Image (tube, rainbow, N blue to C red; front, side, top):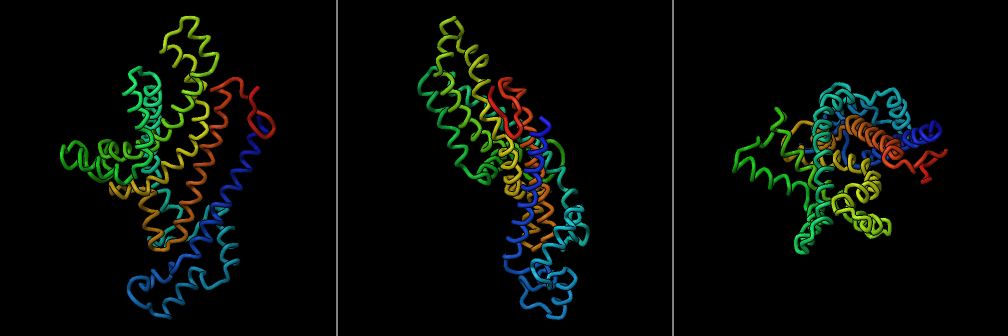
Length: 317
């Protein structure tokens, strides 16, 4: 197990380095830079050349690309991502100040998505009425296809502007968290339901399920006592991806609901070419994804005792 964990940690370090390097190159290729934005030249005509040169020297943007990258990477290893061009303070502090708001939203949306996905998948294979089974089976693809911002606007229109049950914006109190969390949970839960219902149908067609039925087990015992546990394992695999999807979708959700968080900070930082802040966000989100994936891997043997650790992978005994 220790060798497995060490190998996964090394893979995680590589993912963090790759995410940092790719984001550095992408931001370098974007038109404009933080100095031009600071000098007021991005949207307000030509900036003062002397001021622009001074700012580029201050940010180190006048140096060759490889030199900028090497300096930035060494600083990043010390968790120093530089100074934010917007706030003038440390970039990492700008991110950690709003990170709890996004983690709170994600931590609320993830259980909702899992509950929604499991209930919908079980219902679509459990009900006997054919028309209802077909209707439930059609809901997951619909939930995946509808854009997040459309879901957010529909919920806003219904529950904020018409019924006035929940606030339409802000981060104050639990009520302000409900609609954004549901908005995030619907597409992720629909994707989970799509995968789980397919696995459930395959599991229910296996010979051992017929044997369980022949021994007198009812539908409920077959579903919850035998089929669901085996069918849910492939779905656990994508939990790390689902967390990443929730963090990505928070960009749209926090914008729609005017919430403070990583999503809105990302949009603002990209618009202002605030490279230090964007890179701090990329590394932190990648770190959360790596830790979640490692946690999911460690949970496999707990969910299914047939799965054990080998030197470099999980194996089915």
